[in-house]
Length: 268
Image (cartoon, rainbow, N blue to C red; front, side):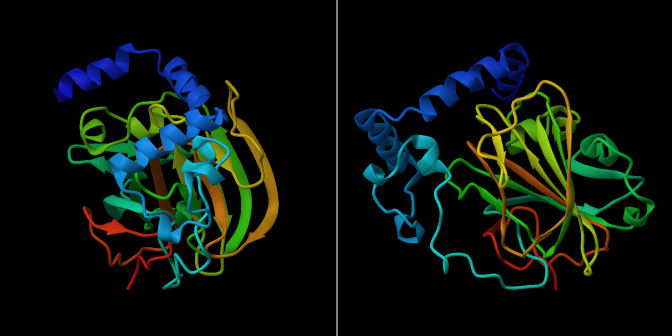
């Protein structure tokens, strides 16, 4: 079944499928969007207690619900370097020869992921990958305060990024659509990469009202924009993956397979 699912992903028109799903998710027809939200809740048992708006009728569309805001006390910041998202820790490790692990038996080029050369100062750095399932909170936040230097949108495919696909599609994260954020910090520079996926209707950064939809890479200098730890970086309009790449070598206190929340400390 896994091989059939992988083959299916190679054969389907990924962007056409995502646009169709996106059209449904943007619908503002009250009875229709309420029905979809309630069906989703029935499948995934959403924790409404931490949402700012606690009823399906309070959301304009399914997308509005899917990227819902949480209450201020729902995700406390508990360390100097914290998880950028809710999700499953799929892999952690140290950068070796400018490569990072994707899954057992697969790695990828970090410069190819970023769309730029990896600074030599990152050669002894570390990486951590968080997979966001459909049931997770889908806003991504800055794990550390710093200055946002550049944002790069890289168009690409929309393969699923779940564990089975990561284990079978070489260079998965370098194939998919992604948003690369480069930051400097007194605690050590870092990259935060948001990876698109199958039926993801877009990656929407915090400074744009709409997701990127270009067919070519876009570089957007951010003029060393100051950001706070825990500030929203962007949101997925359906599930995906966030990758944190740090200049400093990290002693991660979370392990692959662990479920984490945004704001949870990542290092000892």
